[in-house]
Image 1 (cartoon, rainbow, N blue to C red):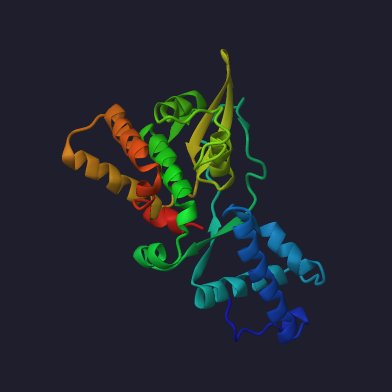
Image 2 (image 1 turned 60 degrees about the vertical axis):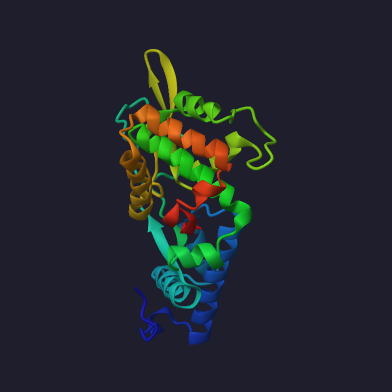
Length: 262
C-alpha cells in the first residue's frame, strides 16, 4: 500500500504532478466502471495513463497504489485486483473464450455495510440485473460450479427466459445479459472439443467465487434446506418460483455483497 509520505523523488516529478496523475487514474476508474457496467479494468489501461508522459517503470505501480488509498479513504471503495481463475478442464483441445487470461485487472467494491449500501446507494433501476445475476450464479453453483450452455438455457427457459428473447420489458436481450456476466467475470465461458464435437460451458469465475458472494449463496440455499430437504432439482424449482413471482427484484435483496460489487 502506498504511503502518502513516501519519498517519490526517485521518479523525478513534483508532488503536484504526482497528485495530478493519481487524480487522472481515479477519475478513469470511476467513469470506466460506470460506463462499462462494472466490467473489470485492465491494469495496462491504468499504466498507460501514467506512461503516456512519464517513462519511469515503477511510477505506474506507485500511482495505482496511491489511487487505491484515496478511493478507500475518500470515496469508500476498495480497488480489488482480480486473480484470474483457471478453467477446471485440463482438456488440451479447450479453446478459451476469454482473452488476456493472465492480464491483471481491477474492480471497485463498496466498503459500506450491505444495509447502508442498499438504502442509500443501490440503484433500484438496476436491481433486477443484480437479481438475475444471483439466479444464474446460484444455478451454476448448484450444478457444481460448471454447467453446459444447453443446461443453463434449459433452466432459464423454465423460468420463462429464452435465448432468443431480445426485448423483454425488464432484462431486454437475455443472451446479452448472460454475456455481460462473462465480461464482468462472474462467469467464465469455455469451449471443450471432444470426439462428439464442441461443447460450450459456463463456469463460476473469480467474482462469483469471491468469499462474501459464495457465503451469501450458501446462506440462501441453507434457508431453503431449513424449510425442507431439497434435492438439486428442487433447489432450482424453488429459485424458479421466486423468479416468476418477484421478477428478480426481491431476489436482489438476497444478494448481499454481490450488489456491492460495482
